[in-house]
Length: 265
Image (cartoon, rainbow, N blue to C red; front, side, top):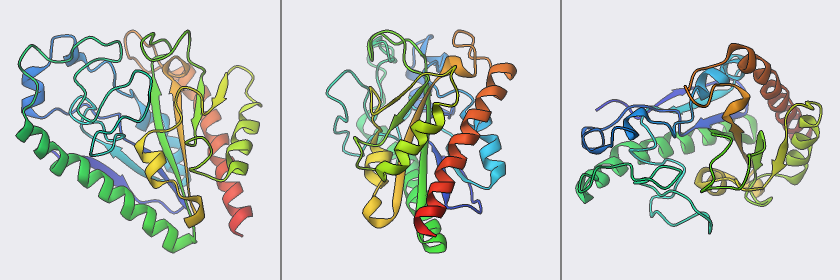
C-alpha cells in the first residue's frame, strides 16, 4: 500500500495540514467508482503547489496522498456529522452535488473501510498530532493551518457563489480571536477577494479537534474558492491566478506568524 501522507518538517512554529489534495485510490474504491467519480472532481486540486512558497518560508507540511473518496481525513473516526446542513461523511459515497460515487452494490465493505481507517486515517492523524507536539515543545506554541479548496458554486452545500476566502475557527474556539481578527484585517488589503469568518465552512474535524488555544495550539481552516487559482472545469492550474493568490497566502501566513511572535514573545 502507498504511504498515506508526506510530511515535511520545517523550522517555523507552523504546520500546514492538507487532508484533501490526494488522488491515490485503494483497489476496493477504484473498482467501485462510477466513470464520473474516477475523475476525482471533488479533490482539493493543486493545494501543495499553491502552498509551495509557504513551505519555502519554513513551514511544516503534512499532505495526504489518498483521495477523499477513499476516506475523508477531516472527519472524525466515529463519522459523527460536523454540520447540520448537507455534508459528506468519513467514507464519502456521494459527490458534493449528491450524485452517487459508486456503482450500485460496489461500495467498499465493512472490512475494507476498517482497513482504511487503520492504515490511512490513523497514521495521518498520528503524524499531525506528533508534529504539533514537536512544534509546541520547540517554540512553546504551535499554529495549525488547515488548507482546503472547493468549487466556487456547489448548490447542494451552499447558496450562490462561495466567498473567495473562507476562514474557519469553529466559531472562535480553535484559535485566539485576535489572530482571526488580524487575518481578516490583512485580507482587506486584497480588494479583489471576498472573505468571511465562520460562514458556511467553520472548520472540520482537524480544526475543531486540534485547535486548543488554552494549550497554546491555534488552528485556522482556510477554504479557498478554486476559481482564485485554477480553472474549475478542467482542473488546470492557472499560472496568472495562482501566482497572484500565492501573494495573498504569503501575507496571511506572515500575519499569523507575526501574531505568534508578539503573543508568545
